Image (cartoon, rainbow, N blue to C red):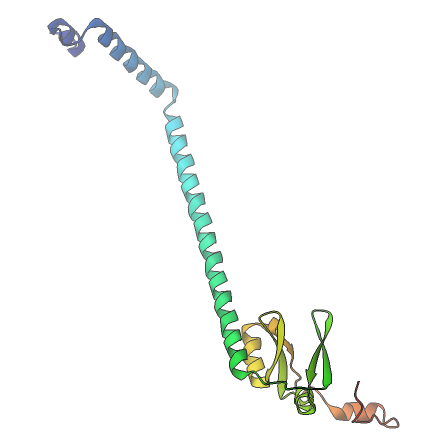
Amino acid sequence: MTNSLQDQLLSSGLIDKKQLNKARTQQQKDKRKKATGLDQKDTNKQSLTNKKIDAGKARDLELNRAQRQHREQKALRAQIGELISANRISRGEGELTYQFVDQGWVRKLFIDEVTRQKLISGAWAIVRADGRRYEIVPASTAEKIRIRDEKCVILCVDPDKTDKNTEESDYPDHQIPDDMMW
């Protein structure tokens, strides 16, 4: 009665001696693994796998954030383009050059006298469209563009900040002619 199941299977002829020895050695290997802690490799593998999954999720979140930010910037550029195209003021065939600084470079626009006066008074502004060309828009539109992207507004004179009285009081003996063109 004390015969093990393996011995009973061997005596009945269902398994042979070779299969019995193979099963016993496998059992002994399993016992040794449990005793020496070799099963911890499996848990370490699982923790490494979990860390890789977490790192992958973090990378995916970062990529999603970058893509969302790119879409938002693209939408802002589209809004700015629509504002400029809807409110653009024609420069006409001007013989006057209006010079302004953009990113350290002096740029020129050929404009007429009316446009020049409106730019100087602050009623109109110069904005960069598509990063390559310059357009003239009303100051109110320039403020809307400035809210979306400050870099697009190149020149917008604030009429409140230009005080002619301080210029005149600085040099009362030297009159500067108003009709002088630079």
